[in-house]
Length: 179
View 1 (cartoon, one colour):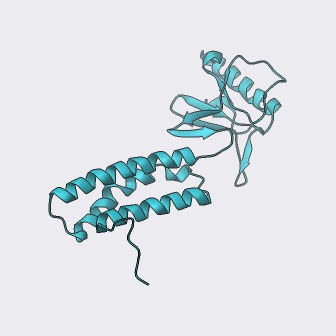
View 2 (cartoon, rainbow, N blue to C red):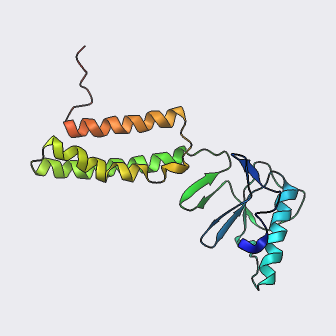
View 3 (tube, rainbow, N blue to C red):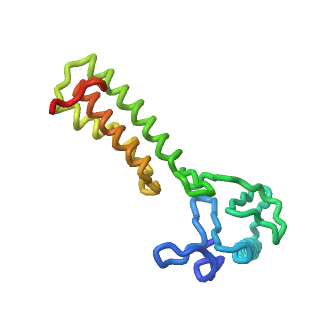
């Protein structure tokens, strides 16, 4: 795959001034292009290079995701609205709010588990803060490098953090701060 000449190909999308036309993770390859013709040329290049070394491109396993339907050439691959690459869900619209909700739920579960431990044993706040920061926040922030955070997601993350601190301090959600 590395010798397929994809790095020199002009097809792809521009990100930060660099032309990116493929993402590789383990034995999966994702090809990207701005047009159907360029995508077809990338696919043919991969197919040709694979055949040179005795590999066959499996069209049945090929998945196609496009913002508009591909009509100019026939391919038997399955059309999908999203796929998972390296543990991250990639969607047609680029929305990743679903990617943010899941770690927040896992973090809430981890915090609830820790909270039950804190209730059973006598722990001081000096220990609770670092413990929760070491055991809850990494669960939430795993994979955050690939998130596209919008205003609503930012607010959701801030709300989660505030919820964690309220749990640690045993402040009920109905409490208000004195002015």
